[in-house]
Image (cartoon, rainbow, N blue to C red; front, side):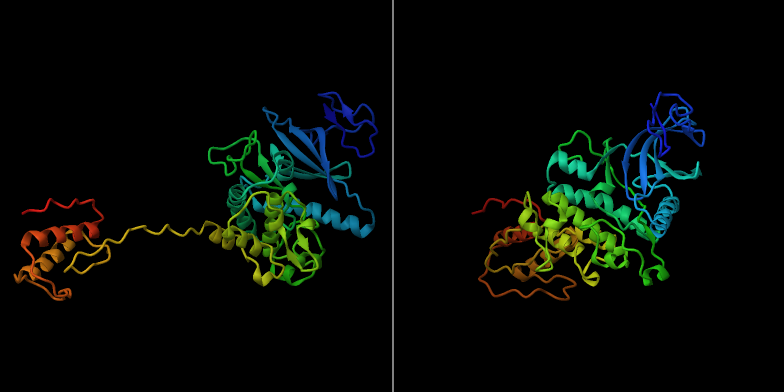
Length: 394
């Protein structure tokens, strides 16, 4: 099927392969290569369509965004046009990144502005949540591990997304070998892609110091965005609220107590999470910017921080007459030399090069075989070996 992009066409459906709309006569191919198949959705200032690129032999799918603001008024339309153009500029500046849709074209035709970008085959996280219930901690941790580097890349290009929410995160339908969400019981969940840079802005020093238009989605936008003062940490806030929404399957409005000016999301968790992870999420959604994470790298550092498991070495009861020594990192040859020196002190035989002999508490005399036995046991503690105690000799 071919779909007519004339906003005033009463019957936009057309047969496949048609070059002109049979109802209004409008040209169906954009730039003589992009054929629209069907509408995908409509946002505040544009309509989105699924299309194919007929200029390439494989006719790959792509997405066409048509500038079509819903709100009226000269100032509103002008601002919407700026944002539409801004999305094309941001996608072009960010270049090619596997988790950001690639800009394919930006042009005007028949007095309409169009943006053509890579088609991401998959479902956004709002649909994933609706189909598969709340996420658990492991899945949200994987989500953060997958998305935070993307956010870091965007911020390094001095771009603030300003509209991070489940609807703007798409999971590819294909599952790559190292997919971060393969543990979710879905038909096919792949790499996460951050989409919709229509609200993005450049974070220059001048721009950050100037109050701009309040842009974002209610519930996910950081407090400073309501004053038009988005910063990099504003994206951290939006991602944190997204994680909380995925863990609870409840809208952010139901998870924030305005009387206490605090988040109360723990009461709505569908599965328990660790205290450490809860603290990370709390810091991501701090209302005060100076108490919030300032960068994606900071979140990743805490997310990946792992306390090495304590070495569960059961202390052995020291043998009478032998000073118990904690395990240290020494080579076997050094340990053998030190034990030989220790043995010489037991037997009263001098040894060369004894600079700092260990202090040995007084003990009753022992036979050489007893001393060998105890020193061998001490040596095994140093080296961590499973040296077995030789049978006692009579």
